[in-house]
Length: 189
Image 1 (spheres, rainbow, N blue to C red):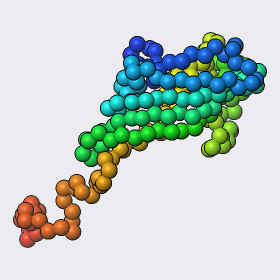
Image 2 (tube, rainbow, N blue to C red):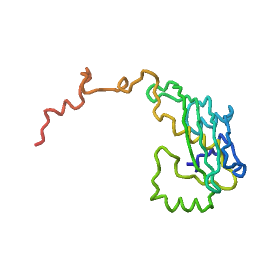
Image 3 (cartoon, one colour):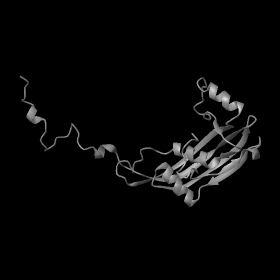
Image 4 (cartoon, one colour):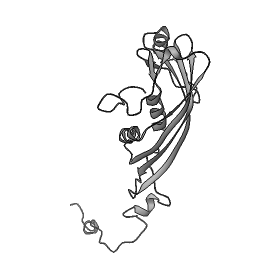
């Protein structure tokens, strides 16, 4: 999940690095909110018309010896283009998430990699742990990715149905001549 989702500059559009060494067993609460400039970058990343707001309340705590658990709630307000009419469609995202991060070189990372095939994940629980490099995890980037998962891939304006826009329907009679009508009397010798 935390792979090559960065913009061309190599830096995620919404970044909030947290030093792992500052996280203890007692959960710390971090509130993050994207600035107007960051919102523009997130809109490009998500390929939407506009991101009006992106914020989250995140609880960070130690997991095992050197891992970190993040839990929280992310909310966003976005504007997309309707897939039928291309009109702007506003929607709100309000999602809870949970993710575990472990250092790339840790024993836990190797155990997870080796057991990945046999791991049975709880669909409502956290995803398989993500690895991080160095001594920092990027809460902003994680929040951006969790919000992205909640975006409707086929947004529609209110009261718009695909059936209103179907060009032809077998059940409706048309005045147009059927281009295959000339073939109806054709027989192969």
